[in-house]
Image 1 (spheres, rainbow, N blue to C red):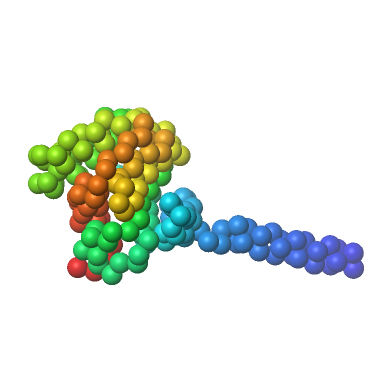
Image 2 (cartoon, rainbow, N blue to C red):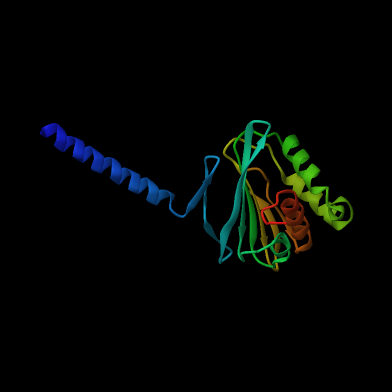
Length: 184
């Protein structure tokens, strides 16, 4: 009789713990073991998680990237051209050298003719120069704010600001073209 009562209490305790754990995860999405909030307050504006994805190299988990948008776009074109707050957030799942990080960004972003020459190429050089070695668990955060420009920060960057919208549009365009999240 005593054992049954104790077993019932244990089940109630476990059920309560599961409810508390579920409540702690409410308002978050998880991919590849990384938890990200479904919404953030940036610059006094609310942005929502539009996409979250695990990136692997061969069979190694490298990073989880998230896209936050103030306005919910229906297409890549809308996401790029939207003059609203948007953020790319990279959470690294392994150590990455600065050279690897710079090389990866350079290879991806130089697919854009606009980023290969002229003023936007200079902005790309400034952004790449800000990147640092990354330790497992660190982040790189790229945020565009309308009327202001692009901020690059987090543990993976020394921090840099690039004014205006043109570079941000080019960066988001290349990223969303090579990582499609909308039907084509």
